[in-house]
Length: 265
Length: 245
Image (cartoon, rainbow over all chains, first blue to last red; front, side):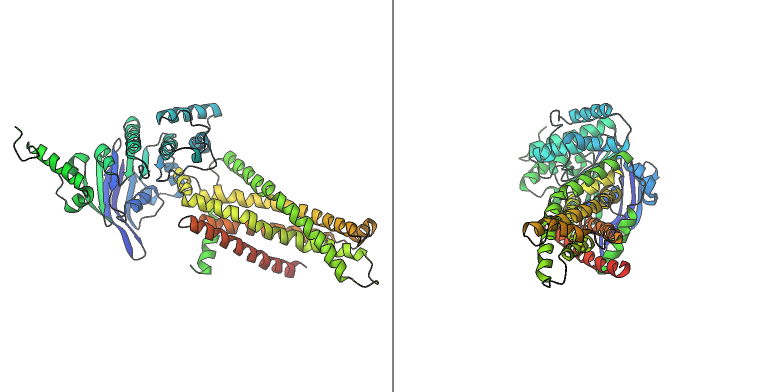
């Protein structure tokens, strides 16, 4: 579990995060959504320690990350996995070497044990025959899956995903979402996902935080989001005519009416 | 950013490299990779530059020494000293600033832009220690070796040019080569090599590591790194000459 208390971050005069508090629970997909420039990337970078917040606390399972010494942070970071927007795979290494890298760096396993573990996670992300390929030789969706494999190879307690679906087609996006969701449930990971993708919101959003101009504007689940009366959230989520129609239909269904206004029952 | 900001951040980067490695074996592997990239990867250009510089310095020295009162062996003496004192360390390192410096800056810049450095940080790896330290150590190990190779080949190139063009005989060249040789000149050349090795590796590493932006910025960082390294090499060359000679 990650607790965030009154987080604030500014760059010079510009305040990017204002008094953000939230609780990210284990075994759930916690989504951070918001338009570009709303502060969600800065929020995630503060959570993983790539940016230092000006004020506030980030508590990982009772351990205060903001006041930790560098060595303690290093130890904690071995429990964190992260999937980057561009996958951030090491270009000069094969898929197998990329996934093996955290094992090489932080474990004393033999090569055969490491290889076994690598093959297990690659199989888990449905990438069986790509071991010897280089990142330049695989597709965007495969890169994301390698990124997930690398992020989970050390059995992390926390998984961060920065726009996991960016640049992917809708079908591959669903596969990646499903994979992240399954891994979250299977290993009881606290997963934090930064996304723009409305399919992800509706499909896997156990817990959603909507950011607006650096402030937490709304919080709830994918079920609650349909019925939200928050205008800013509705303007963001249901921006298209199609999604507005979907919302309207769901609202009518909830009231037991048909889309043409008649009572269904 | 002012020069002082850059210098302060550069010093902090250097300071940040000195931590206990997370895994000695991985750091050793990275050091060996960098030694191969810097040493073997630059050997070809160093050989070509050294041979031609030696050859040209023989021809130009002979062209300027027109008096019959000066023995021809003096040409070899001048070629030897200029190659050891200046051409082998300085010219080689200016060439290496282009070859190695741009490679270091663009490699780190690309890693920064594609979030590979962030990925390493999040894993709990000190990226300054893991990515920059092996490059500097590899430069310390390989660049003096390249300078020695350049010195030997430069003198040999000068000898070949002198003999093939009929300027002086092999005996005259060897007589000049051995007369008045000062071993301190080699020490001086190696002092320069170590100083330049640090400049060639650390300055491009700084510009690459702190790149902000995209492909255009990587290119700019690479150019700035090479230009700054060359200027610093020439500046250090003067300071070392003034202090040690």
